[in-house]
Amino acid sequence: MYDHIGLKVKDLAASRRFYEAALAPLGHVLGSHDDDSYAGIGPTGEPALWLYAAKDAKGPGTHIAFRAPDHAAVAAFHKAGLKAGGTDNGGAGPRADYSPTYYAAFLIDPDGNNVEAVCP
Image (cartoon, rainbow, N blue to C red; front, side, top):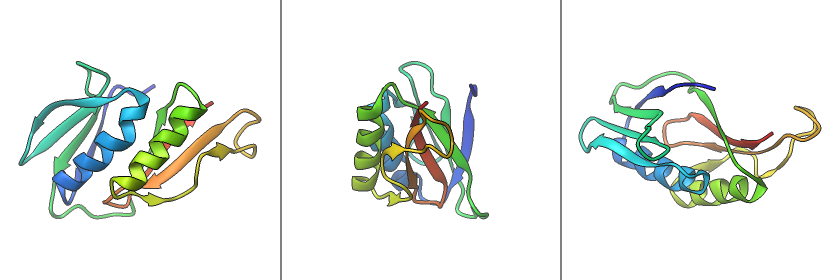
């Protein structure tokens, strides 16, 4: 539903590793990037998540939800994100309190943002 989102990150390399790994199962790849200042990740040729190096990044974090094609992709997102330095914030599974068919997983990225993959 969104066109693009930009996040300030304290450690661009760590955030890039995390998002590249966690979002690969959802079909997203690294696009435009500069190793010192930014990285764009999204569908091939259409980066929609922009990471910007900002040593002074502050705040409680942002919530981002990425649509997944199926339950297996949600689980793969969670597994890859944990391996790449994310913190578990809710494993892959149904969230009946959100809606009867809502299936999601949640991670906290290296900067404290709550990142979700969802198959509604």
